[in-house]
Image (cartoon, rainbow, N blue to C red; front, side, top):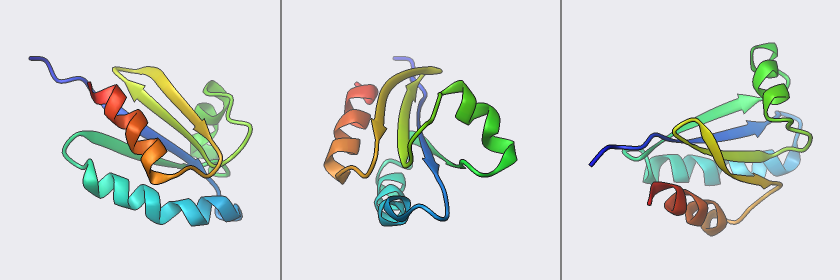
Length: 94
């Protein structure tokens, strides 16, 4: 069985209230799924992340993209429940 690569891209900013609320949720998910996925935390104000912000047309934060083998399979915008995010991750891991 070949392993598929699943990534959770977390687009956030330090001045974003909902991003601050979601940070511990994303940390919990990262810990729970540490052997299954990679979490990339991408601050939208960091010039190093601008190409990805543009590529994925991130207009609102927080935004969460789930990629499987380099293809976006799910996109969630705004504060989400932990269950909503983990349900999408579980689908991507199937």
